[in-house]
Length: 413
Ligand SMILES: C[S@@+](CC[C@H](N)C(=O)[O-])C[C@H]1O[C@@H](n2cnc3c(N)ncnc32)[C@H](O)[C@@H]1O
Image 1 (cartoon, protein in one colour):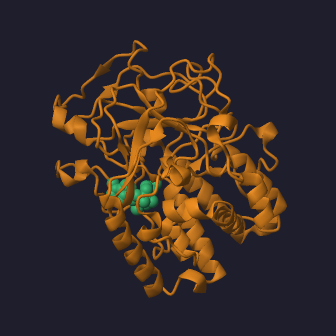
Image 2 (cartoon, helix red, strand yellow; image 1 turned 180 degrees about the horizontal axis):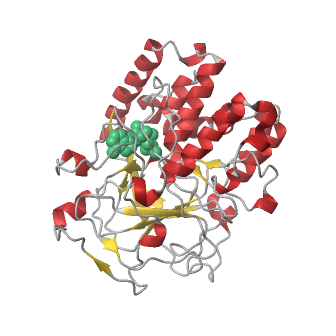
Image 3 (cartoon, rainbow, N blue to C red; image 1 turned 90 degrees about the horizontal axis):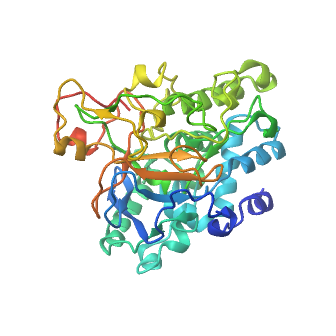
């Protein structure tokens, strides 16, 4: 496993591997420091913040994956006897072997739960985080973290360790527990990417999940009441080659639900699941578009792998990419009927959107890479957030919209 993981994911120089040509860079983002990572609090963990002002429509960063979904497929092939959750565990194990320092710093809960030692703030203090978290950035750079990060980091790590000990986890975690830990991690941090059927070695069983060092650390924010809606919707053809139009939570939930099914039905994997490479929608040709996720980890919840709501619009009221307008694409926006779209409300809601692979958002972005764009003006120091679109009863959302108590029950993650 170790050598497989290292070969497959050994350190990538994102800028070199990206090979972005001038022609591809239709609107390249600036390569000045764009973001930094800080700890919000021990419950929420890390967040990603703007290091400078951005205007609506600006690209903020562009990142290559830490786990490339193609490699996930390869790993699958090499570990074919471990269907379903076993594959997840293999993946996480491989990830921790391949990029131990990055993974332990970026995903300390996962690392601790899998029995890894976490770096102390003394080992990290004053460190340039670029070699840890910024290595996958293609555009946009990681700025120096605020000094207070390290003080908060120690408290965070202490709490994680205590939690792991209290649950009897860490190196003592059983294989079953580790599978659950891996599933929870993927549920909260993975983006599900897809590979065209003819490139996918296991079209019936493979649902690649992509992890990014920075994009996987962006937190959720609910849409405030009165959020702007875009009148005109793009068609899939307009957005070509990207055709993904399924809710984030639906796709990831399908992914996990199918994995669960696979583990129960290991002998009958291919025939028992819907076409997973299309997230359950047969015939959808979605070239490397992924949809984000982000529900709270819920290791104690027996229903942690939950069936998805029906559709994005029905269940969450959130918008997928096709509904957002580019500032220069001529589409029109209007406030919703309430007309209550005050500046404060707009500032409270999500301020970013993302896309994996090339598309309307960022034509120059390579398959499996993620691009992040400002959906409104963002001031330096503001946290970058997007709407996960997830709804899970019992999750206590701490986003600014909910903290402001808008009176609207806007979040059921
Ligand atoms: C994609 S990760 C975001 C990065 C995460 N903060 C971290 O440090 O790993 C999603 C997880 O962050 C936390 N989170 C994100 N947005 C949140 C919100 N609005 N309220 C509370 N927790 C949130 C939840 O634990 C969720 O499972």
